[in-house]
Structures are given as structure tokens and as C-alpha cells.
Image 1 (spheres, rainbow, N blue to C red):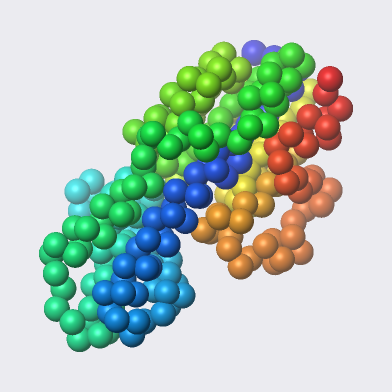
Image 2 (cartoon, rainbow, N blue to C red):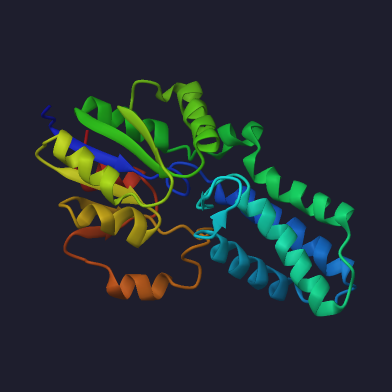
Length: 255
């Protein structure tokens, strides 16, 4: 099937401001842990430990599935419990099951479907309408838990985006194979990829012939503190940096 042009979007941080949910949960968690230990550990120390523990769990085998946790719904809340346990051991305090359960509930707040609709960036719907008008084939390719990401797909359709993208694709972790298959299946005059994680969203597309739109996102937990390094290494010939997806229409001279 041939198309005029094809564009593949990441979801979180690009189309939806979902980092806000994680930021709110992390703030609440660090506040509670800080108070629980009477200020013995700083909030910054608590957040650094949680980030290290959470990142370390990505490729750890989940005993329930026998596969890596990746972006499964259970990983982030469990990282709160493990961080609490870490500080209990560091502070010589006995772990409370009730406290651990309460902290896990805070971690689960990031999956609040009721908040998803208000997190779609306002420029997304107009851009997708413009892409449709200019005969683009649009895909959304996201990592994550199928139930969580599927709920976000439903929200996008609820706000009027049904029919504006061809497919909503969910992968557990690596996007390389999925983005390559899209290019092979849909030959076009141009292929573009849009993401807020340079190596995992943008570079994987550029490696197979896409032009990249890199949208740095301040709440991207994988890139915090690395933005200068990423910019220094970014392939400037085959990608551009944008602050809003609305700039894609301007860059491609769409009317």
C-alpha cells in the first residue's frame, strides 16, 4: 500500500502530558517518606533512590509472568514499596505492611483514567486534522502495558481523533521492529517519526530511513539530566528539535 507520506508518533510526552501524573505521585511519595522518617532522608535522596530502583526493574524478571517488567502496570507502584524497604533498612526501622500498601496506592494513581482526557496537548487534534487533510498516514507507536495504553487510545478517540490515525500500536519495550515494519508495509514519499526519547523513539526510526522530530520533555524520567549530551550527539542532518508538535505542520509547510 502506497501513501503520500507516513508519520509515526510516540504517545506519552508527545501527544499527552502524562509525566504530570508521575510527577504528582513522586512528589506525594517523597513527601510522605520524608515525614515518615522524620526528615532523616532528604526528598532529593528519596527520589534518586526511587529512580534508581525503578530503572533497575525494567529488565528484571517479573515472577508472575516470567518476563521482564518493562512498562507493566505493577512495576512503578512496586518501586515505591522497594524504595520504602530500602530506607527502612538504611534507617534501622521495621517495615510496616500498612505503610507499604498505602505507598503502593500512591504509585497506582498514575493510571487514573479520569485524568487522561485533560492531559492531551491542545495542539494535537488540530495537527492530526491537518495531517489528514494533507493525505498523511498517521500511526501512534507506544511502549507500555496494553490495558494502560489502550485506555489512552480510547481517550484520544473520545476527543474527536477517531479516524485521524491508521493504527495505535503497543509494544512492550523496543520499537525497532515495529517502526521498521510500518516503513516496509507503507512505502511513501517521506517517512517521519516523532518522539520525546531520542534513542528509543527517534533514532530507531532514523536508523531505517525516517526523518526525526525530537521533542524533549522535561518530565521524561529516562532523559532527565541528559538533554545537553543528547543534543551534542543528535544527528542534525536527519532530525530537528521541536518544542510542540504544532511545529511539525510548519516544518513540513502544511496548509
